[in-house]
Image 1 (tube, rainbow, N blue to C red):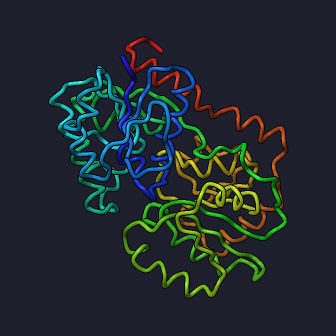
Image 2 (image 1 turned 90 degrees about the horizontal axis):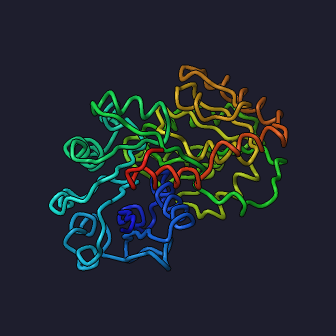
Length: 347
């Protein structure tokens, strides 16, 4: 029987946050270790094609009515992996075994920071469907522990890894005085701290921000923030992989002052490329940040945060430290773990 992934929402156009990247990379890694894996994708997508890719109607309508599509009904399978979004509630009618990877406890612990659609999908629908999941998995130990307490059931650990193919990165050029921060423009990412810090950097510094505009007051006022900084802030929006890799390699420090994270894929990508890192002192960052990362309390003054960025940029990690850090994250091992869980075999 095939291993089937629901990637309909994960492959919708102009969607490239951590959970979408996770899902696409997981599918590619599964294809390398087993021939019997297929994925339903948004027919408008160009991020996945070829063997094992089944295009269906996309968007939220396509996701909701996926179980009624001809391609879904014709395919024989017992297990459905949902690595990005909850499954359509109509999936329960066919009763395949559902394996759900949940990336964060944010919908339950800080749901007021989410828009209505986010709460509907990731809190209310997820909570209603979770008793019917055959297995729930998480990418990191802190998230697995928190979800187990929230959902009152065991949560398996499957791991996470960089979303970008780092082999494609151009040579590093750390000569520019530039700090980079990556993530959707939304309250949890704490861009207010980045905005407050920027004026305290030397005038020769710039701040590169990569991420689509999301929700909340920070998103509503985003263009005004950018205009007020008079060119110091460079917003790249929904950047391509090539652009993001180039920005990583041209920057002198990576900054993340997130209030909460399930993994923080950009932080790990930056660490794997040898960037100095300054990040908020939260549990998940302590778990995944590179050993050379500098941790900043969420209460840090803007001027002190700027100084931390400047000081960190002058302290490049050794090549040996970077190589050792990169070995911690492997898509092949994640795929192997997921395949074993979906097959019902012990890990």
